[in-house]
Length: 469
Image (cartoon, rainbow, N blue to C red):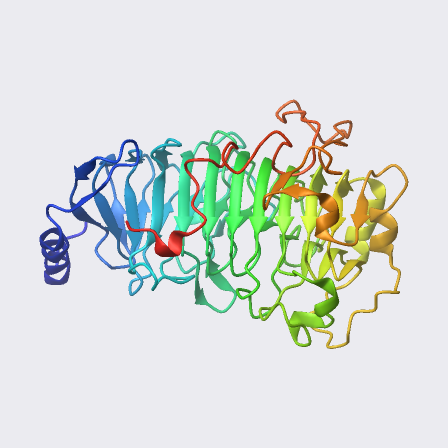
């Protein structure tokens, strides 16, 4: 049990005195409700929650330092609670193996993890992020999660339960603890399929928006918005199922190496260790940073006028991954898809890796075999490769369009009734289980949905920079 030191006592007193009677607008009627600003953590890297704890609405909590939800403990977060991450101490919430988080918000009153900086002063990496660790299998054995935290993950229980994330937003998280050792917006480490993940948005992450290291957790209705590195990163044998996911890039925000919509590896070595990274994604819409393919003629936008950040591909599938992506839209990246390496291409040709019934539109070039970020040459639009042959194979149902406008969207993300993605879904692949909703359209949204009436309505936020919390 930690003993309160002078620094923590002063932190607690200052936090309480700062806003002992703060008020904020209620999200379900406009009436003002009164709550306190309270500390969560003491700024150290070893603060433990060792008994069940509830974060109560309408209070706001300042997440300071590394806060661990320990084995056997449940952290409950009531709908509408705001948790603001401290920048200086890299505030991070870690749910360890055997611990649980019960963060079940509502569409009218989502739970928000966000920056502690003032509106207009927030940026990716303002705090650490959210980490859920479990006892499900991965292909690297029991291991310590990335990000400088102490916690390990991995086991033999695919049905392990780390709790609930529902109607949750995570904003301005994701920080590089040190080189190649980052905390993502949300990190799942061997998280089991007893965990509920539905209606979760990660915005302005300083690394990947969502990353899975092994595990079996399933999820629906995910949004990755204006992240720094990859939107959806799958590693170490992640074998869950994901349906209805939206990824949207900001042309001015990208990683120092190469930002992708998807990045998928079996493991860092590209070995055939099992379980394989065989996650199945369906009904994904990815919108990259390229507004005008003709203006983006070189890697990383060095000769392009519309993108300053460093971007690569909608789908970067490599290192023996067996990922499957069905019934989706991949739009407006420098490259539509890369299936990199002989092993991954062999898995694609054998049916272990799948890209099917997916539309590629508005890319500088649709397909390529290798990364181009390390190659300073201009992309060759006339080149052919195995990736293109596979993607456009007979019976795959994949199609290409020169411009995003050809997809006929109504609003930013929603297909019009005559859109080529308003129909054409296929559900016959053996990897598609009864868990999936067998909708007829491609991408994240139905042609009957609008900007005012869709699964993201009410709880999501596409302008967190200017939101008063």
